[in-house]
Image 1 (cartoon, helix red, strand yellow):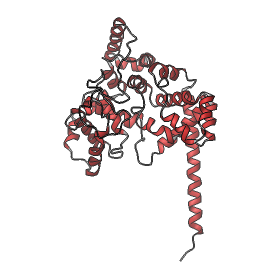
Image 2 (cartoon, helix red, strand yellow):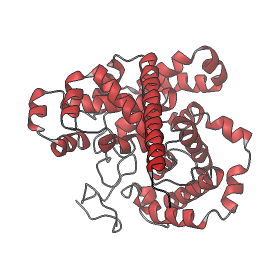
Image 3 (tube, helix red, strand yellow):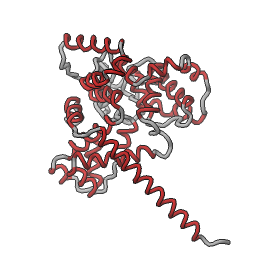
Image 4 (spheres, helix red, strand yellow):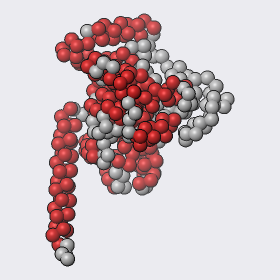
Length: 359
C-alpha cells in the first residue's frame, strides 16, 4: 500500500491508504469500498433510473397520492445517478430553496458569530479525512463544508453549530452542489433531527428511552442483558443518532440507509440501531462473554462486518415487527416519564429551598 496523498492529523481506524481512490472518492478508512458489488444488470439499472426520473417529474402527484410507491422504491435503493436529485426532493429541500432564493449567498456574505466561526474552522478538517474532497484546506470540500456550516449557524442561531452536524454536512456535499446540500442540511437539522443539536440534548435523551422500550419489544433477551449490566443507551447510541449513522456504517450501507431515512424519517435510524444491537448480542454465547458494562459496549461500538453489511442490515431492518403506533406509544410513554421526573426534581428543589435556614 502507498502512503497517503498528504499527512493527516485526524485519528482513524485505518493507518494505511491506497494511492488511488475508490469509486466513492475514498483513499482509505473503514468506509473505503475496494470491490463494490453490482447486483443489478445494466438493463435493470436503466429501468429504475427511468422510473425515478418520471417520479421526480411528477413529484407532487406521487407525494400526495402515491407516497407508498416512493417509500418502496427508496427501500429498494435509489440508483446512484439519480440519488442527488432524489434526496433533494425527498428532503423537501427543493421547496426550501424555491422559497428562499439567494438566501444561501446572502448568508455567506455575513460575518457570523466569531466564536462559532472559530469552532467550525477547528472542526472542518476532521470530517472524512481520507476522502478526496477533504484531504486538505485548499480542497473544495473543506471550503464548502465551512460555508455550509457557517451559513446554517447564521440561518438558525438557536442551534448555531454542533460538532455532530459536521459529518452530516460533509456527507451531503459529496453528493450535492453546495447550495443544494445546504438546503438538505437545513431540512435534516430542522425537521428530521429537530432539536437534536440544542444544548442539553433533551431530545436525544428522550429517544434513548424510546430505543430502550422498542428493544424490550423486539429483543427481550438483549434488553435484559443491557439492564443487568446497566448499559445505558446514551453510552452507545448518541453518535449513531446525532450523526445519522454517517460515522458508523460502511459506505454502501450508509447510502441505502439514507435513501430510507429521507423517505421515512428518524424511525429508520431507530430500526438500524435495533438491528445492530439485536444482531450483535442475539447469541447467548456472545452475551455470556460480555460479563460487564465495558465488554458489552465494546461489542456494540464495533459490530461485526456482516451485521452492517448492506443487504443484511436493510433486510433485517424491514423485517422488524414494528408499527408506527409502536413508536408513538413509546414516545408518549417517555414524554410522560420525563415530565414526572422533572416534576419530582422541581418538588425536591422547592422543598430544599424551604428548609434552608434564613439569615
